[in-house]
Image (cartoon, rainbow, N blue to C red):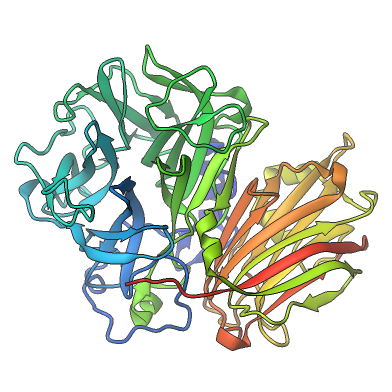
Length: 585
């Protein structure tokens, strides 16, 4: 309890990304994603003797075996989408990190290539860590990445490097060259062990600009660097943005979006009066992500979050198992694409035993909500090409305690899109102001799917066993506030997901900025054996859970809709599809 109380105090100082696991500990760790810069010398090079398939995903990106983490440098080049990520080719825990490289025509079916970057020079001898890609004029891609030159101080002495293709005419970009004038940036005044993850660069006022994540004691910092030739970089006199009490900022990302509510994405260098800007960081100390929406002062090269969506609000792409995200602009379909990594919730010994760890979540299109206060996300449309057998429901009423199974699809491998409706808000429970002090996942634990309510809980039971010994509920619950408004809570609760008592099974939650005038709420969930990605109200709130059922596997998994509130709920429409296996060579 002492550890938990300390973490609560730290997080209250952070004032950001409130949904952080506080009430559940596992092997001495607190949080969604356990630290991945920790070296496991006895585990990092233990190859997979036999890969266990039981919880391995089918339509999410992951290698055949071993560990992956951060998505790096996604880009489109000469007809192919390129995806790079941190990969351990020797084992199922973090270590021996190289840049895995795959290509695709649709970001769903993938062909694996040899690693693009491996430690081979003095300036990356101990690791080729995360970075980004920028397409320079003349269709010339460049990779910026963090190299580790010494193992001390932990997690390593970090510098910034670049790599270029050996052959620009090769659409597969199979060979990369690290020029001898690396590193292009060494920490001078910066923290040498907290100086990493260069962002995609953008261009204005005659200079290229990029960000690097860092910290000064507890102050999280994004430093801005300028260059005319992409090789010689100079740090700006002031940080691009910073925040006291947030610790190390990893994987900074900065990009423009249309402020007119359009879904079309914008190139990273876009400027204009109808433009808003997103700044995102991954918080190393709490393993959570925060983003803000704001304005970019081009003359001063500074970012200013809007009051309505600043650090104190705590916006997150995903309130569940999601970290180290990276976006890129798709020039072909004119959209901004978000990649995110979901680590395992299993132990390191379990990861070694099963021979793999980590998945990349389905790429999401991201755009600005018409309110301007948050982002919207939705799985890329290409995923729908994998839809197989379909099951439909329409106008099915669910009274208190009702559970209805959705039969006729592969419940362990499915895409479910449902719209719920209700006739009245009168039975919404009163919202207790003291809950404002609670992380939302604590409230999801207090007000779980089995706790009867007024308007809710209602939703789906994913990866359920025959007799419901195991199930992962994803649900809504509506509360009435003292000022006669309403708050919609969305939860994804892994607590009852497995009969394995040793598993880490957190409850995740986030509030949904929903307009209840039409008395409807929508939910889409992507279910893939050990992951449930859920999108509430058209992508206003997104939650990912990693789960490891023992009974609800393969053909023994079931899917249900349910209602445990006194207000009757109608499944206005439900479409559920079996998802077929993509090509993953």
